[in-house]
Image 1 (cartoon, rainbow, N blue to C red):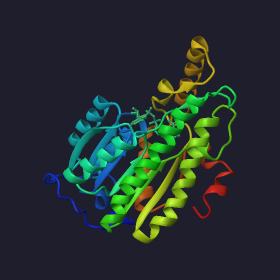
Image 2 (cartoon, rainbow, N blue to C red; image 1 turned 60 degrees about the horizontal axis):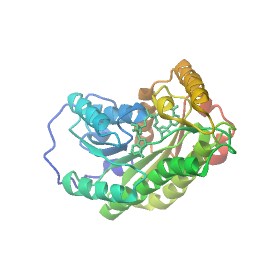
Image 3 (cartoon, helix red, strand yellow; image 1 turned 45 degrees about the vertical axis):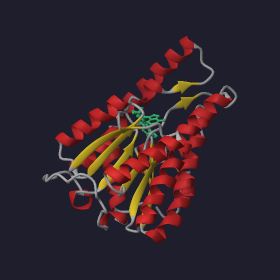
Length: 287
Ligand code: NAD
């Protein structure tokens, strides 16, 4: 693991003595891991997987109560320490403030997981500029802010680290139903590959994770561009049924994330749909 073998320059509260029993405890025990979108779905499962491995975890979400619940659970299952923070990842100033607080109170982040994201369905012509802005603000700008601010801190510290960006199979599988979402995720995939090339010399790994359908509450909050209320209810029900039918648990994505960090992988497709695409090879030479 690039950065995870480095000693953390942690000067925050004392690290609790725990016996971590989860997978990869030898890699993540005592490391500082920050996960965005940690209140729900993949972000919550990932925070808890790092907690089981004995990491010190920071659960970040715009949903303060949800982030606090994730941190509470993390503490119970073996995290060396767990905190929750409230931030909107699309708000650059809020992310700067978050980074300052984390650095001064908990230490430099060893592993950052840029996971927060929102869903948006609807044809290109039905998607309004406001819809485009919303989805790009969270799914793309949120990742840019995280990579630039926390990646900058890791680079300054000079002891390596790892950044995981949650993209999607939608990043390389064109779809008439998801033009804005897919574009945001394709950008995340490309920025991850560019950043990986840049940060390799600083021993900072960068991984893009590309899940297909994962059974999380994302369909309950996704927007359906161009749909009236009745249409939206019908489309939401259909999407929720589809995701539930695939029945792929977020915990398996979390496992893939921990493994990807340990093995410093560049692009990791998760779920059969994501792995099955011939188009993946265009974006991930050699992975
Ligand atoms: P989810 O809705 O269960 O969780 C998303 C979390 O992000 C929520 O807790 C939400 O409050 C938080 N969030 C949203 N906008 C935020 C913002 N601006 N600032 C801070 N927090 C914010 O969804 P999920 O399925 O767990 O999705 C997690 C990531 O995985 C997203 O980036 C999503 O695009 C990606 N993804 C999901 C699937 C899937 O099938 N579920 C597939 C591919 C990729």
